[in-house]
Structure formats: C-alpha cells, structure tokens
Length: 219
Image (cartoon, rainbow, N blue to C red; front, side, top):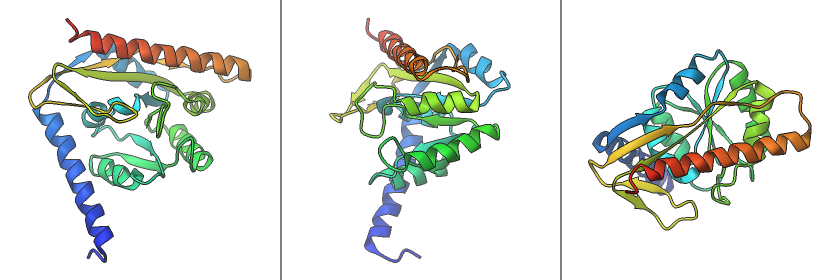
C-alpha cells in the first residue's frame, strides 16, 4: 500500500513513463542499420557495454528491453523513477554517475560485467556536457575486457525537447532507424594518456554515428 502522496506520485510517474516508452516504441516503424555490429559484439564472447547519448536513449531502451541488460542510472532526483521504469521493462540497475555515487556504481558494474552480463551507460549523462564521452565508461571497458558498442537512432518525425540533452521523441507511426557502430576494445595495459586518446576516439565515433543516423532523414 502506498503510504504517502509522494509515493503515490512516484508510482504514477513510473507507470506513465513505462506506458509512454511502450507507446512510442510500438507505434514507431523501426528498421535496423548495421545489425552485423550487434551480432559481432554479442557473439564475441566478451561482455558488452552499450553506449548511447543521453538524449537518444528512448528507442534503444525499448528495443533492448528483453535482453537482460544492467543499466547505470543516476542517483539524482529523477533517477529513482528512471530506474524503476526500466526495471519494469526488463533491465536491472546500479545507481550512480560521474557526479554522484560514481565509485560505488563503477565497482558494481565491473562485477556485473565480469559475470558476463551486458551493461549500458549514457556517457554524457546525467547532466552533460552533451555529446562529451566521460572517461568512466572507457575505464570500465578497460578493466572488464568488455566491448563498447555505440548506437543511436533517428526519426522521420522527431520531437526534440528543449532540454540540455535535446531529448528526442517521435510522432506516432514515424519511421525510425536504429544505427549501430563498430564495437571497440580498450586494451588493458595502456597509460593514462593512451586511455584519454581512446576516450577521444570513442567520442568522435559516437558523434560520427549520430551524424550518420540524422542524415538518413535529412534529404
């Protein structure tokens, strides 16, 4: 039984967010580009870290909802609603981010990855800067021998919110393309300078992938 108005509002928020994700997902006409990169990552025998920019999370959350993925979710204000929502969609979660609870979440996710469970991180979250790949995801891949698999999506009829991450939805029955990038490995034995070089390389690939996705409907 819900004990307070706050709990009731939280329950409604979780229920609404869950229904909205299912609504947007089920009414979109989804196509996949570069599916072979996904198959390559899954069949590699390595754990996989799915990475997507914060503002493009909605469709990836929907299409991978039954894949047993563990997500890192912020401990900030809306993190509890996000965590409970995606848990209803089939995800597990660890709580923390680059700005709060990061070291604890890093250790928990490292353990999850070493057990072979795929994970997902929003590398420019929870508060940006937008499209800046933070070093934590790169260090996690280095320590766990995991593949980093970037992905994004584009829409024929996008709805872009005026938030820091330009969070993207779409109109019902829009055409949607999910686009995967080439899986990447971060070597275990590299210097801090080399690790930063990998961070920049992955960030550039993520941004190139975003441009490729957006170009699908730009003509």
